[in-house]
Amino acid sequence: MNCRRVLQEASERTTIDHGDARTSPRAGRTLAGWPHMSCRLARSPSAPPSHSPSSRARARRVAATLGVRATASSSGAEKQRTMAPRPSPSSNDRDDSGAWWTQRVVTLRPKSNGIFIWTNKLRDEVPEIRDAKTGVVNLFVRSHSAALTINENADPDVRDDLRRALDAIVPGDADADVAARVSFVGVSIDVPVHDGRLAFGTWQGLYLAEWGGGGRDVEVVVTMRRVDDAKTTRVATVTAPSRGCHLVQDQIDAAIAPALNHASEEEAKRSKRSMTDGYGHDAASPPALVNLLVRHTSASLTVNENADPSVRVDMEGALNRIVPESWNDAMFKHVDEGPDDMPAHVKSTLFGASVTVPASGHRLRLGTWQGVYLAEHRNVGGFGGGHAREIACSVTGGGAQSVVTLTAPGRGAHDVTEAIAAGLKALRAAGGVGGGVAAGWLNLFIQHTSASLTVSSRATATAPRAAEAETEAAARLESALSATVPERWNDEFFTHTYEGPDDMPAHVKSSLMGASLTVPVVNGELGLGVLQGVFLCEHRDGGGFGCNLNRSVVLTLQGVDDR
Image 1 (cartoon, rainbow, N blue to C red):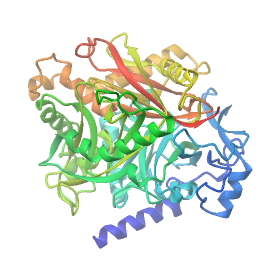
Image 2 (cartoon, rainbow, N blue to C red):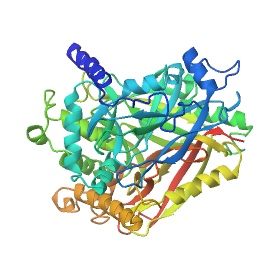
Image 3 (tube, rainbow, N blue to C red):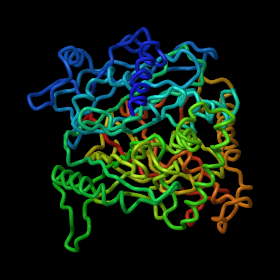
């Protein structure tokens, strides 16, 4: 234990002192020259105290949300979104549930390609985290060549090995290759906050993975919702019976029930709606988001099939082929803890440690066939804890919610940015509780197990050969998924095969990309980078069971109302 602690502390010092992922020389301001902002700025007597006099002064000076300005790039076409000023919100600028919001950009400058740890940088740049008793932070990197993940905070060999593994899973150095690799890792992470700290496990830290060559600014939009209500959060322990993928929906439902009920009741009181009709059914369904974070680096969470148990068996078999233990001899250096350890770290990044699920009333809004999986990636479980895995659960109530239907033209990755933007606009235009959000987040959750959502590179008006660029990025993502999870596995080891040769591969691809995606809302719009877009990944030729190519996506909007 002491050796691991020394490694952890040394790793953090190395990152900060030697600039593995440090703030740019313009720390404290954005590329446009404006200070970082907090949407919770002007204070009232009832407002929670800010971190320090300097942060309070900075907060009083400026409140800003994200704007756009053009910057030079190698192609001459790239733009970057930066901070633009706007008048400070009033002291009553909380969201509809009374929570406080903070939104700002943290600018990192990796020196080269690689994976870098930046947990301490986030704590330094967003001191409001330390003031939060409970809450949730969304981190969203606005880059077509960088990704975010959570993994080991101690041994730096883990980061080097993870980079080599990801490069092997999605090979190539072209822009489309990089875009596909970014989608495999992800650009958005939701992390709960407990008692002024990110609710990480002992060995967890934030990673920035960069494949753009380094030497330029990488912007991370940080959006935090501070609730300060201990009843909205808890840490549950779920025990996996063995290595593999396990349906833990019942345990999750039991763990979140008190917090979800409390959040729903508080929201109903605020909006003056009756919670039940005369028949004992929910008459009002106040929206909420439930974030789950597994506090370990050798396990993960995902949403997939809740019916046929053979899906879970096949999922474990697929992971073992995507990240084979033979890589310990071929490329890994982090091998001291057993042959299943470093592969477990890679699998954890591929599936993810965090997942956010929408709720309405007292229930998660999962699709008919969906359930939460705990993926245990080690034979004997985690360091010092075995198969008992802690899951931090946080509920954020309030906001506005709707369901949109996205229809894919066929199998593949399809740009649905405009459809999602239209859904956001409709939520804001509808009014009512949470309708006028100017700064906050929009969670997208697809209610299917053979489709997924991701952020990847898209064509823009400024990009040369726009149509070709869009087609190339989408085609490369689809080819990378098909190469990673080939249909020949149906003949080799899959047992869930009766729904067609594309079915079980679709389940695996869905977990690789993810069912849930949180995008920051900035000035009432999607806070994407200019070269970024939201993509619907349709993993089956004919679509899903009973819905064909029509996919239901739950949109949940939360944030500071501008009306």
